[in-house]
Length: 384
Image 1 (cartoon, rainbow, N blue to C red):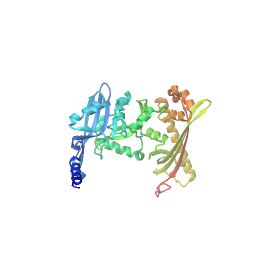
Image 2 (image 1 turned 90 degrees about the vertical axis):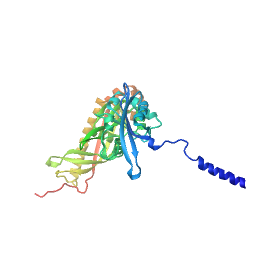
Image 3 (image 1 turned 135 degrees about the vertical axis):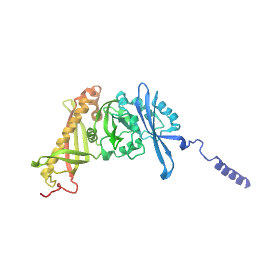
Image 4 (image 1 turned 30 degrees about the vertical axis):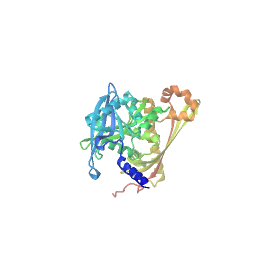
């Protein structure tokens, strides 16, 4: 009995003495990487990091971002080398964003992003952006008005995408899938700097269009809204459209997109492939200004809906002309759709898809409905 008691006591003491981490790193010795980017690939990689040092605790905790840049023969070697001037070990697992400059995008982004796709230290959910009219270093050195760091600022914008529209966010793993897929070209959101109260503030607006891994052009904010519509992305967007109101002439009326559904299907006629595209949009009326419009009048509502359909048909035709004729980039995935629905036809067009896509016929049908008019069905009346 005494032997068992002594053995139990020995095991208890051993557990208390031997408990603890066999390997640990003090948090004070780490510099957290919130954002990283590549400004140049050739002749050397220029890697930029936004590192964050925390001090204090609880409500008194302070976050101080620092931007460091260096050259190296690869992204990983340059990133690792930045621990030296930082004086702390770089901790990558909390990274939010990955940025690449236009120069890198034009040359091909695979060498720049391959490390992110492979590394076990960086999450595959990092958001990917292309900088427009500025470098990655300039973006990281800008001053967001509310967030502690640029990386947190960009992450917050992505999380509000449905409310602000104008871009399609993409993570590292999603970009890899788009590069590997047949019959579709990749797109990435763009970051640019705007002046706000004397400071340069980063915003996310517009889209970089790719063929393979090389960027071939840009889409502005309005064109990116159309891209979101045609990809069926849920978003809240506002459109100011000159609308004819009876015999009173044209007035700028603001419409809010409250719902959209898109249907795309390939059709084969006379041995040639085409795409049938139907877009249904629901709108709310946000502002009518001085327009003498009454939405209780069914004929007037039908006239407004017809004008909306005509306006968006024209815009989408111009958009399709740009991505087909100018960029020749299948960012809507027409080829992918054809491959899925008519694999035999796709096999016959596969090798010459670039040539065929440029002249691919798109049968477009746009339907618009006004479903909300706010708290009033007519404009504000002013007594003479």
